[in-house]
Image (cartoon, rainbow, N blue to C red):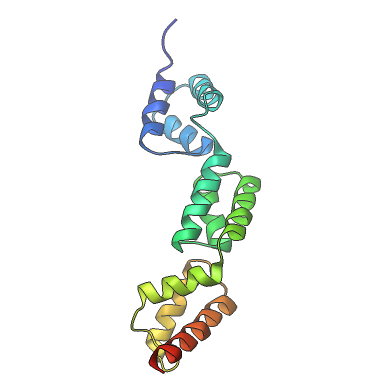
Length: 160
């Protein structure tokens, strides 16, 4: 029996980085492997545990939430963009949201990324820049303003 070249290619791809089944299938199709070989490769990779969309969704969601790169709708969008099925993406976003305090994460990111930002008297362009930064990552305005208030209280307490 000849070895499935799509399977070997799938193993090379997965050795570099975890992928969703949809993403891996698309990569193999772009390399012009026959559909039957691609389906066989995906099936074998799933069976051996090399390909697991749920594990990938959970890991990506946790990582992106903990680092402050994405939360909420933005996180859901990023997971779906990577080929994660909607149901798995929604479950991973919910689980990541439960495991991380978004307010504390936002405040920590605010202090780290914008150490000179003073929410009590910011200039309008800087305030827009900071607001935009967090909105692009999926934070809601009420969460952002709550972090601004918390930072203002911390800043006042540090100066007293």
